[in-house]
Image (cartoon, rainbow, N blue to C red):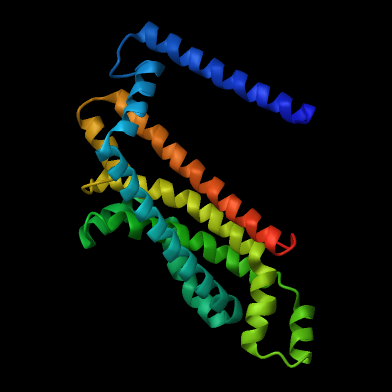
Length: 254
């Protein structure tokens, strides 16, 4: 390990320990578990999830909803982004939709979706609406920054539109696609869990948080919050690992 990396790791560890100490002291001084439970109580609740089958079902339900939403975001974002980058008419038609979505509060989208759909569908729909503009805008930026010289060279070699798309356009846009997809993935976890909190489907991390809040079990609410944070972090790690694997296979061109 390089000295700078070791130093940063030590600083991070010290910071985490200090925050835990401050949390413990504040909890002892306040001495009101409903408002601020002790770190060990939260850790105990968190660890109890691993031995509870219902907790695993809740986590699995949230993961499935997040993945469904993310796949829809990628599918629609890439297809419409490519179309919008190629056609100014399509891009102009998409602008009002994107403006409305970006200006609408997340809670308003979730509440409206709750009226229109079943509780299990609301998190998927809401996360899709919030994540789609992120990937779409990245696609448009990527299309604007593509190398027209390469496009002209491809046409001069007799490549048809399909060959140019898959051999020149998409490979040159991969950094923008991956950046947009990663940002959309991070947003997906947050919106899915927030929608679960509000709509309370049968299973889900957000539903479990809401049940714990109703019972004034603050330690359990914080335990589920740790689960939500870990899901987001694991999603990023898996995404980065997949991208690294793609880079190795393509010789570091991504």
